[in-house]
Amino acid sequence: MVYQNFAYFYDELMSHAPYDKWIEFTKNIVKEYDLINPSIVDLGCGTGEITLGLADITKNITGVDYSSEMLSVAMNKGFEQRKQVNWIKQDIRQLEGFKNIDLIVSYCDVINYITKTTEVETVFNRVYESLKDSGVFTFDVHAQDYIKNHLINETFADVSDKTAYIWFCHEGDQPGAMEHEITFFVKNENDTYDKITEYHFQQVFTHDFYLEALKKAGFREIKISTDFDSNNPILTAETDRIFITAKK
Image (cartoon, rainbow, N blue to C red):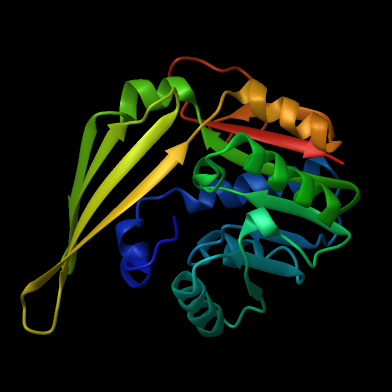
């Protein structure tokens, strides 16, 4: 689901997100695959935190998102930081217009929102077609064990000067499925609070499924790493994020 209502205070709510780790992980991928001045596309770029960080390592960077509100925030930040980024509104399931890209990345739950196996395969196919020969695709998803042990049926909350939220994570109909009910309280000019409730659905498939879908799309040299460590392929019951990197 598109983040419609809270794009303009999303960054405040995500202030603890480890964006620097995603950026550093990407820099390591660039070094590992010897990508020189790479063209990079960030799928599901949101408000552009990762995209703008990657703008420091390349002059050819594009952020893609389906939310106009998110892209508006990202564009404003790019202008303030004086960074040149191409911002494009697209559904990544219908990705088009890209050719000979060196590196395509997709982080921070984006692939979790692709909830049908056929649509995951479509995304992988379109990414493959967008890359140059020997181009690289890397993304992350939550590990199913982590979802089961740390997210499902849990409640999360946070309070700041201007916003507060209560986040319920309900179990879905199959393993790896989550239904998020998120209620935000946003302080307005009258010192009262507006209440906004959104519902989001995520589906995380097994890593074996993602590996097979990548192979089906034509990728080779596929590898798994965990929790931001590109050199650690070991999955445990406490692994939070699984990173999968594939070369065309």
